[in-house]
Length: 243
Image (cartoon, helix red, strand yellow):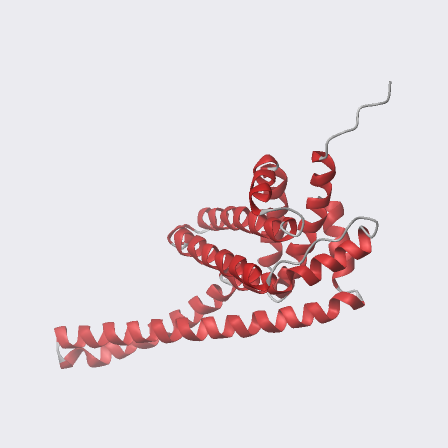
């Protein structure tokens, strides 16, 4: 697996991939900003509504103390959104990856597997549907593990493992569906669940690094192209030796 990682890192900033990297990173930033703004407005509205309700319940004398509480809540929201920006990156980059998966996969195939038949690009609707599905699942994982994050390291481990499992299976699907029908992709993923999860651990580690994680669509797709190629060779029926 480390061999795949080094190949991907070596190719990531090569001239053919720079344009894809810039477009993917730019789109990821735009989506993240929109998501953070929407979350901030929602949380700000909830906090204002909650403080207004408390003032009505307690009385006008509570205005000054509640104003102080409002400032503390606003600071907490800002810190929480900064942390959330990192934790929401798997969802954002997964959506972006679906739009650039074929360009990334083709670049890897032409560089390292030029003698093999190229994959068939997914229809745009199917790629987008896969990306939306992955993004929603990533958000579900985030919301599910959010309470556990209160328990410091324990919650972080749960979040990391869940993210690795999700990104491993979804990025593998993006790479494998260029060559196989969906049912066959699912069967292959189950057969090699350990290898797919291990690759997912590398992707989860990559997406947890601020700024660098903007390149996750490229990193995740490319490493799964390499893994699918290796697993395809391992799964291919062997020709018995001639008598």
